[in-house]
Length: 256
Image (cartoon, rainbow, N blue to C red):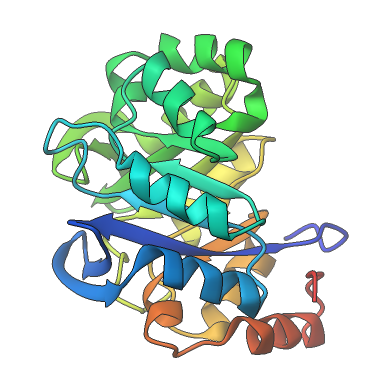
């Protein structure tokens, strides 16, 4: 069960493509949901604890993260920002942190060069290094790590990967269920619980939020330290202030 003495965080996610915030289903069927800076400011005012900015096509297109957008967001908000997508090496990490990000989220590059996590953690500090784990259920109860924006199955067990990343120095983990992403039918509790039970570092639940009850469920049935969501916030189905009050009323510690 969740450690209810711990303050839980709510993190809206800005998936970024072609200069706009977008949202898809199962990593495809992308829809435009507006300007990144406007969205970031809106969420800060709404009471978000942190923000995530994921340049979803950077890795597939073989380019670096869109730094102009990161800089623009950081100039307009004061809450922490995690940036992911297209971060392949030390230089990329350095540029993103210099642009104002609090931490980076690394997925494909961690698979291609696990030592990057170890060295980056030493150089920039554990808190600046998050490893994203895009996972898909390949057989009942078995989840594999996928890379390249969910397009390539590595064949590696996602829970074993989480443990390895923690050992190498990752400061936090962001597991996303590809099966649930954008589908709004709830977080994958079995995936999230398996990872939170396997590691001691903070884990942010991601993929599948459709209603406030889904966030309550993942924060109370797993040891996730935060819940990340996109669609329900972008399309204003859930208001963060109301969500936090709902969570508090149900025994979850949050910053109001």
